[in-house]
Length: 158
Image (spheres, rainbow, N blue to C red):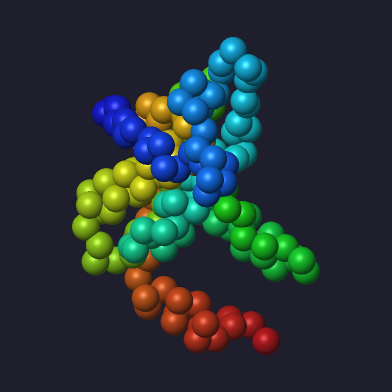
């Protein structure tokens, strides 16, 4: 597994347009206290960042997508941002595993690299955590015909 890191720019760490945070106060653990970031927060950032990449049809494996469809069918239900994402968050580092469905015709190795890069930069910029790894599992390839077949299929029984 490869390890990728990126540095966070100081411009991202601002309180207001007139006050920039001093470098000694940017750490998650410091003399003035501790900042903890929940796994759910990092998972949401990763999910949004992965969906931003063209060529990602959906996140999660088949079982996660089925559960997601059931959740969406319930009145008031909505798609889970963290579907297909699992994370481990420590005091200074995070690791991400995500599964996705790629659009047919997209170069999967380029897609995985773009997703990995966007997830790493988003997490590091928003949380200050070092991302040690982002593992991408491609579970399926989506064809445009898949949607048309599901909508036009006649029921087997009446």
